[in-house]
Picture 1 (cartoon, rainbow, N blue to C red):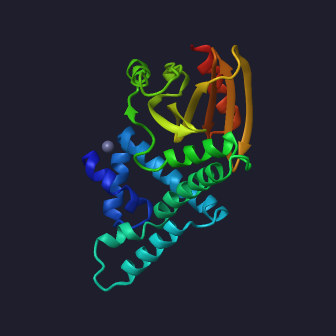
Picture 2: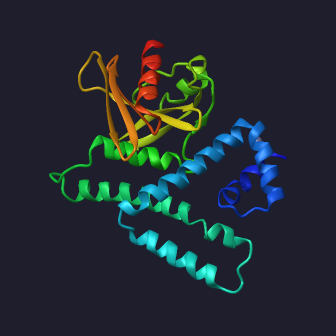
Picture 3: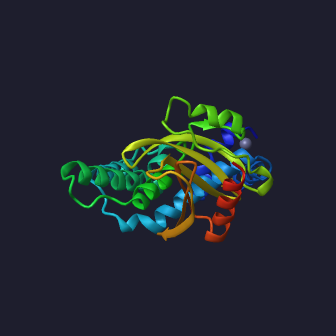
Length: 254
Ligand SMILES: [Zn+2]
């Protein structure tokens, strides 16, 4: 089986829409292909997140419209293969949740600058969840630090550390530029089994370093530290102990 056809069927696999033969074929490919397996894990994670968190937020109008549209299409008698896509409720909601978090933050900040700003954790959590949606994790997909680090040149105003942590069990997946806390920042992405770790960096307000500090929100963990005039934030649903191990390896390697 080719990766293309495997990846096209991953969502249907996740939603239990394949025949047993089709499902077996997909599973056989997932067992031998790390790229497709990672994609599957990301989709699975997105789906889980949505079921756990979607109800915490009010649905924005755009989401309501999408759901009404999806329901109307599903109810029409000419439903064919496209039904699969329109009934992918969890992806619709995942997109809506990210829009809701981000747009409510922007509205608050622009409508009234003295209003309570969303905290760094709120913005990082929204960015992290958004990154788990298909196609959002990386702009540059590479396990090579010498490919990822130069990619940031000219795109962001801080050059983050991109250590190679393969031997420690934290493979580099790639990098992207993201918009967080009012600026475009570099994000370096690492993996740990089926978990993703997003490492955000921006210029620190104070020079020098500080030891790692952790906090948690909605089942996600954050570890933040300062090094070389840069403030780093690692965000993941990985357990706190392993996230601290990751940060220790990361800081020791650069
Ligand atoms: Zn594959």
